[in-house]
Length: 100
Image (cartoon, rainbow, N blue to C red; front, side):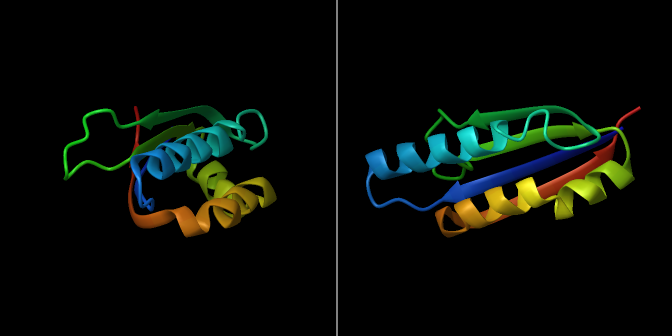
């Protein structure tokens, strides 16, 4: 199994714009549940610490194999979500690792 973790900082001039951006990212990625072959589990968390070094949103997804993760990267539903959310993202960090 491969665990895929992505963290984003999001754009937003006001706290309300940032809140809306966080919710949009959360809803969009949670909407992929059941649509991607080999995606076993997906969880999206929104930061509530409000510390200046925190990311705004984290995605934790488990894939049955590297091939499933590779398929996710190019799956039309994932590409649609990436396109939809592209302007919201200011930074992105990622870690993929094997789970035993």
